Image 1 (cartoon, helix red, strand yellow):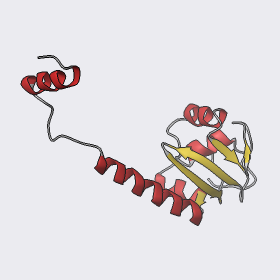
Image 2 (cartoon, rainbow, N blue to C red):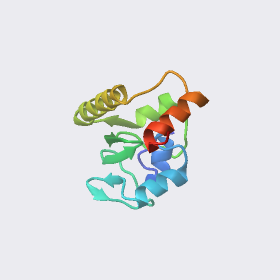
Image 3 (cartoon, rainbow, N blue to C red):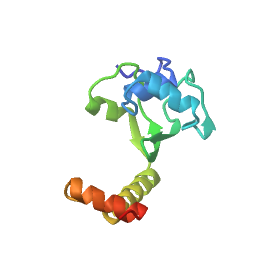
Length: 131
C-alpha cells in the first residue's frame, strides 16, 4: 500500500490521507491556493515525495505536515495517519486556534431554546422600534 517508488498526485494523496472527503474537494483547495507544497503553491498533478512539507487548510484550521508515506488508496483512518506527521509548531498553533474558537463560542449568546411567537414579536419590536 505504501510504496516510495510509486508516483501519486497531490490531490489523490490528500484524499487518501483523509484531509479532504473527496478528490474534487482536494483539487479545488489546491487550485484555490489553500495548499502549499514545500513552501510553493502547487498544482493538483504535482507528484508527492516522502519528506515533503505540505501546508494546508482543513476547515478553518491551518496544518503543516511532513509526508512519511505514499498511498493512492483511501483506507481506514488509522492507516491514513501513518502517511504523515504533523509538525510540532503546527500542533501548537492548532491548539491555540481551537482554544480561541472555544472562547469565541462561549462569548457568543446561545439561548436554550428558540423564541416563541410572543418573544419573537417582542424582539422585532425592540429591533425596529414598532409599538
